[in-house]
Length: 111
Length: 342
Ligand SMILES: Cc1cc2nc3c(=O)[nH]c(=O)nc-3n(C[C@H](O)[C@H](O)[C@H](O)COP(=O)(O)OP(=O)(O)OC[C@H]3O[C@@H](n4cnc5c(N)ncnc54)[C@H](O)[C@@H]3O)c2cc1C
Ligand code: SF4
Ligand code: SF4
Ligand code: SF4
Image (cartoon, rainbow over all chains, first blue to last red; front, side, top):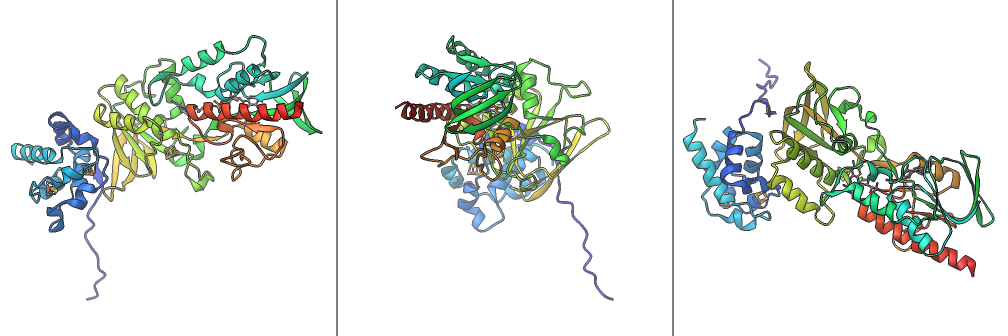
């Protein structure tokens, strides 16, 4: 039989209205520097873990605001907490603090 | 009537220049087509970047107007022509004014948002312009949707009528990025339970304290910035607006529902500016604002000897840049008139 290469279409849309942004509001309370990120990407470029994995901190920072919790939960485990991202951040985001708070939020909340 | 210089346009550029030229000893006539002075700034509430009251600037300028300066309000120019070294200006009151020089300070108009149909201005209930929002602030009107509810989610769309080849405006209007940041903060102050979003292509925080204001909007007011140009907006049955945008920093499409959409309309040459370009055969920049003879050395000179330009008639400018430009025009005209007298 001939294959027409049909694929199941995965919807990539960020469904902002239905996403849960509790993590963002939690971080705004406990680590307000999270709001300062300008998505410059310096953290991603320097990331130790990013060299060997899919970890991309600037995408995580953006995903926090968009409520993309599943993506964050999947990716954040790859961080080795070295803190290099914090050294390069021009907005002085306490990135390591943000990451630690994400981890503790995810631990205490059921996904 | 005979005079040394006619200043056309009583916005901040025209007011500042008229006063200074008078104080340098020249005879000045100021023509304003509206019945009030101050131009656009008279319509605004609090100014970026430092929250100053716009009315304080207008009051200052009016208070410093010389007593015996001739100001013609509600006056439209019907014709202007040049003969020898003089200009002859006819008005709707059938006066003719003969003048040695002309300062064009006719400013800008805000972009007509109807031309970007896909954003639904004039079609959907809750799509307004930044100029309209500013007037709501100024007149202390409650911020409500057409349905009478407090909006909980408000989006600001950058670059409406600017940086857009489709409508033949390739230039950046300079002030709308920081105005969006300012207005998003003001919405958050007035409606503390609301969320505000800016949809931008680039954030152009070029001026002193602009970046700081942007930082404050994030730190104190939680304004969310999403890089991506709105592709379309559609209305729901209850008057909300669904927008579609590519979140280009994440590389994914994004969909969200808004209660109110504010279009950051850019600047276009005012009808008066275009009229004078036409009548005086002035050169323009790509068919837009009045062209300077040289953008560095002769910024306030035009291709017509004796015609000068100041303020937003020559390009989009903030208030501080408009003032600096008006003062430099004064110097140029002063030199021109003094060399003629000798
Ligand atoms: C929404 C918005 C918010 C803004 N907020 C700020 C801010 O917070 N801070 C800041 O620095 N800048 C701000 N700006 C920019 C500011 O409005 C301009 O810098 C300023 O208005 C420029 O002054 P002007 O005198 O060049 O032109 P205008 O203000 O346009 O004045 C031109 C004058 O000429 C008159 N005129 C026009 N044609 C004729 C004619 N044929 N005959 C006689 N008179 C004529 C007009 O009636 C008007 O009075 C904002 C702009 C916008 C769109
Ligand atoms: S702390 Fe984590 S995210 Fe930051 S550079 Fe190190 S591994 Fe990357
Ligand atoms: S370096 Fe800082 S500002 Fe830049 S993307 Fe990372 S967290 Fe954001
Ligand atoms: S100032 Fe900002 S919103 Fe205005 S035209 Fe330029 S980039 Fe667009």
